[in-house]
Length: 107
Image (tube, rainbow, N blue to C red):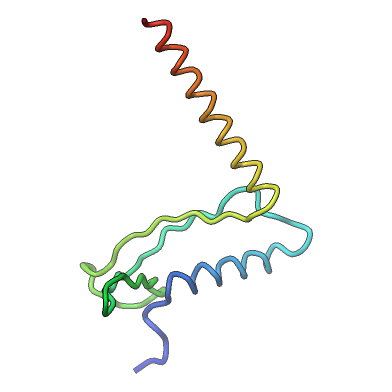
């Protein structure tokens, strides 16, 4: 039997993805957008409750019924992330004000 693991923990996968991305970018570059991932995962119950989400490694053979798709987005902390957060908040506030203005006009 092969020594290759069939699964990797979600936490380990995210950690390795971030480390590889930072290493690959080098000191002169930074991410301007979040990293969007679609993963195949196996969800297992744990003794005492809770879930253990394992990422299916490339080439692993598992039952199709066991595999779930997981979509997630990770982004760097710092100036880029703060600017994106501020833009989302400003957009949400503008939409809220526009909706309130429209309600007043309809009364």
